[in-house]
Length: 207
Image (cartoon, rainbow, N blue to C red):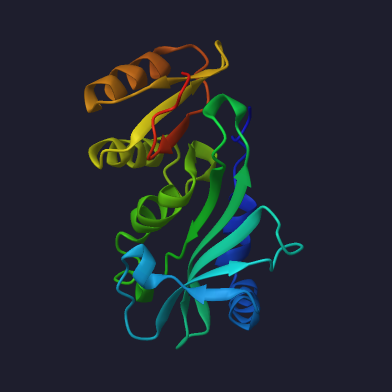
């Protein structure tokens, strides 16, 4: 099971002003969009909307959708999450969501972007699907950002599991101490494995 390829191409494209403006125009013109601010628990600043767009990337009923914070004043995308739903047999029947995330570094978006990633991931995505946290999908910081999000998931009371390639299964990480021990083991390895965690509102039947 591999979810480690980086999404640097996505970040590079959306940082370019023309590409960002084109994505904004495409998202707000899509038929399958809806405002999810209230459902996520996000209070959008004036001029911003947090939207979910279904079926823009592929056919109706596909396994992909998009979440974006759009700035209607500047016709720009401040936050973008391409969500891909996958089946992980080792984790049961519930679909798992892989999130490829980009955040704008524009100073104009600093306040609207505060806490948006955890609100989208834990307040929305994880309520509907199992949540995949892979270091290559993080907007910046790689493993350090991965550590922060996994730590937040544990603190929030989610069931958190780390994938172990040696066994092909998931190991429960239920405390901050267990997470720190795991990180010590990984970082001390000659060739550290890519970090991959699964966050769920349900305990896995088999681990």
